Length: 184
Image (cartoon, rainbow, N blue to C red; front, side):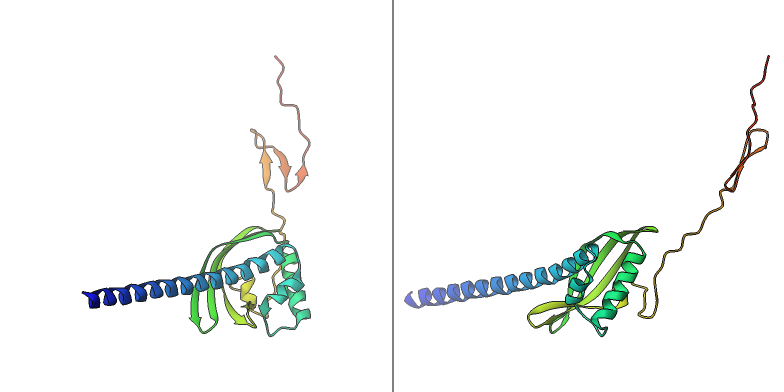
């Protein structure tokens, strides 16, 4: 009977220790996930604030700081981006301290609303998380040697005709109107 109590006590102690250990591991993983998501959202906030230096502080890049700032400034301000939002953030551990972060991005530009799914690698560096930057981070199809620009093409207005097929307006030209009321 005494041996049973000892065995039950040992099993109970092992279960408690295992539960605490699993809880600590879960908590540490959750904190790590929150830090990674925070790094990404702070980066996006820096874009919205046009704070390109703060953006650079959140990335690992082969590009010099000056080139990074110039490229991002030219693209984001050139397309008149604003109100960039990300959602549906998911993480996949790729090994070691490297994670793949998938997300959906939405922004308003001079060409209208743009939205797409994208991903970025994040790696731990000096107890901090950094985004592994490439041009694909701006737009998924963008390569490092491509540029982005908005072109405005003036559309032809077409002709506006009255019920008698008389032109009232044609490609920006307003034609004189005649009085179409009839006298009795």
